[in-house]
Amino acid sequence: MKLDLGPELEAFRRELGDWIEDNRIDGLEDVDERAVYLGTFEQSGPVAAAYRQWSERLGQARLICPQWPEEVGGRGLSGAHMAVLNEEFSRRRVPRVSRGMGESLVGPSIIVHGSEAQKAHFLPRIISGEDRYCQGFSEPDHGSDLAGVETSGVVDGEEIVLTGQKVWTSGAHLANMIFVLCRSDPNVPKHQGLSYVLAPIRDNGVDIRPLRQPTGRSGFSQEYLDGCRAPLLNVIGGLGNGWRVAMTTLGNERGGGATTQHLRYERELWDLVDEARKRGGTDDPLVRQDLAWAYSHVEIMRFQGLRLLSALAAKREPGPEASVNKLFWSEYQQRFGEIAMGVLGADAMLGVGPEYGLGRWQSTFVSSRAVTIFSGTSEIQRNIIGERALGLPREPG
Image (cartoon, rainbow, N blue to C red; front, side, top):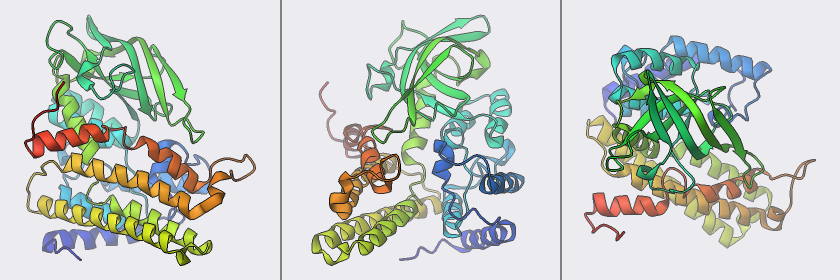
């Protein structure tokens, strides 16, 4: 199935494809942008130098944060254009160079809720890569109750002072900025007393403690904020308006990339098929059945992406797709990890390499246990779909 996107988007695809071929740099075909974000990308050597040069070319062409409005440094690309862009970068095997949470979460929230001064100060620093953000939302005692955060934000002259604890913070060890949801007014209903603050995380009263994961890595951390300071300029949307800003952030977090995310899962699936062939597993009807299940679910993601893309091309706002999408891919990924273990068979119980660590598919399985929890648990997503999309009664407190 191929979606007819119309002459404008097809012309954009051809123009972008020509630009990539004219400007591409050899040696970047196997660079995974997620490795850059997670800090597992080697920062020295010829590949790293090529990546930096490629980033400069993308920046000059305004192809970093291209979905942002032109007046703040982007190209004003629509959701449909971004889907085509992501697909072309993937198809031509070049990294897209994203700015992580700064691009996908913080930037859109500043664009919607920030003042002109805030846009002028923060957005260029995200595009250039000068500021790298991590998310300070979750707290130890509140689970998915985001409005229940207790980290305090006390105004002191022209600054706000943050005190409290955050947890499950991805990429904190690589970030120099954190966007924090704090309680700036404890005397009003909990949704009304919150503020959304951008704070420096280095040498600023923040104790970052890595959390060791079952994979052996420490991709996320907990932070103790003790007198962490930020100028009032860094309060996006104004004091007490943090809930609205946070909802903009979460909408982007849960729905972002739905039009093309199947591409990553598709590559991963065919890699597992190759693994099964090497091991003779494709002769096993149960293995074939599991791989067929995975293939059908990746195709469902593709068709859902096409559906969303057609809505974007027609300039229709998406509905509850963000929660539907998050629920679907997270539960798929968890099941896919189990299928990968089945393909490995007894070898799944053995470590690999000189350090006897986890192999690729073992890491996929172990790390997938978290995907139905982060960015809103599957239970929360079902509540959102049931109550807001289907009009079902609210779950009893």
